Image 1 (spheres, rainbow, N blue to C red):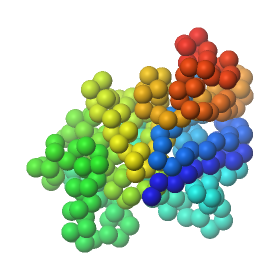
Image 2 (image 1 turned 60 degrees about the vertical axis):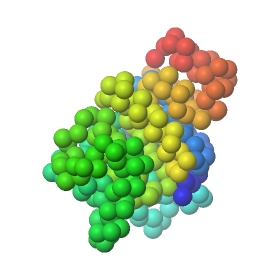
Image 3 (image 1 turned 120 degrees about the horizontal axis):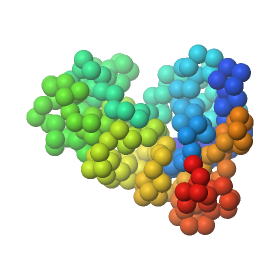
Image 4 (image 1 turned 30 degrees about the vertical axis):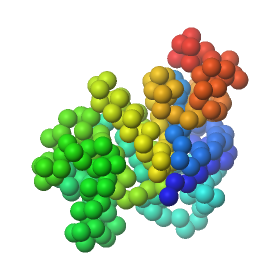
Length: 258
């Protein structure tokens, strides 16, 4: 069940270092939102706060709120493991579990959640691999190692693993940066399909990719050298790329800096 995400007055820190300041944004259900901006401006950092992955880093923390359909994910008594179950994540480089088969990779999260019924697991494997557009390529070798797949297939396997637990939101941190153009196109097509069921947030350095796959775009930038990153503006992708409100956004999108 896709859900809305809202960040309110979000400030993110690594120890004493203030990485990102005063982020306020809303991501609508069943949409694709792209985070763009130069390296080091905090795009991936903001993404990781949306499912409490940021705090896994020693000394890292944030202030403010991240709400999932009105529930603050940083509220008292909220279990971060449950948050990460509801807000799945796909990383920059494909990372199938090396010692596991394709089948076991897909159901790893379900087993962690206590699901052991073989019929349930079998159905989840087929449904998730179908959802990741990988089923037809691997259905005859589900017992083979996941790391034996090509890079693009491995990334789709990681997407299948993420959606197997039926999250509300799917976060993707530069999911195509390690892939060739054909595999990239396959992932982009898949992102378009996934938004029918999930709320999708993607970090990308690729302007064309953001323009192709997203419904709305958020542009992050450094406030000034040595200052925290910040959300400069956010809006419908078409408007952001054709008529942004801020000059910094226009300069970045047209390649005048960054």
